[in-house]
Image (cartoon, rainbow, N blue to C red; front, side, top):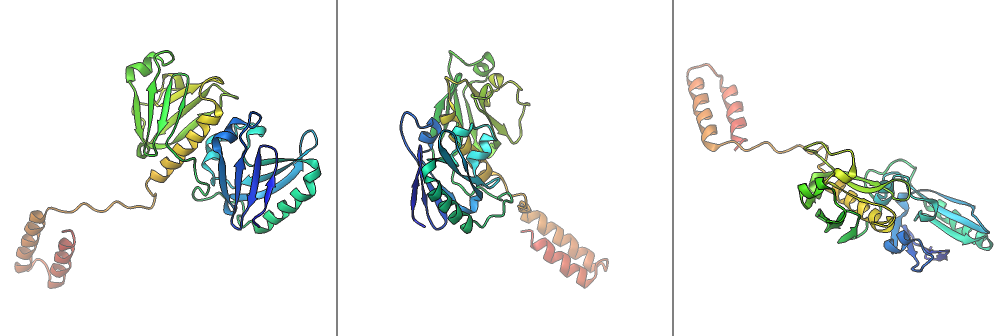
Length: 284
């Protein structure tokens, strides 16, 4: 299509296989949008397109993301307020006919059936990333997450544990809680939590906490999405079978020698001897 539809706070550029969303920068633009900058959404990551009346003489064009296709959506877990939904484009009502045209064009190009995606199709925010929470600074370089505690906010439990570094290979995911709905925190979920992680995030060395004034949504959510995507990429394939360990050559030689003695004594047939010897040799 190659056309651009501009609305409040964002513009959508329609391409043959994706929608490029460019967010505006300005004091009225949600800070999350400013932090994201722009996002390319493959059509395969879109399950449906809707056009509905908005507030105060507007219409809303929305791409419904396919479950499991976007790490940002998965990290947010339904906690984003409507105004911070990066899949919504708000336009003045006089552009409804134009918006309806683009909605129909998008629908005609969609191929996804709404089934969950097997992998992330939308690229996560690029690193390195960092943000300041209430009790520490969180940093992510693409390979590991680091928490450096602030003496003014960190609990005694975190001070006792010391600054923390977690390679993404040791993580199974993240738990993000919006400060606009809950007491905000970002918790790293470990594959083998030893000891068991504390219930309270302010006592957990694998978590940072923040309120509305500390580590706000626009910094902490893209951070969580990037860590989640990296952790999923680092997870071993369920179907992967670890290779069998190689045997000691001396041990193999001893077993073949013993097998030969059994063969000479008539306790093992020629066929059994050949098959077992080939099996032992394959372990070298």
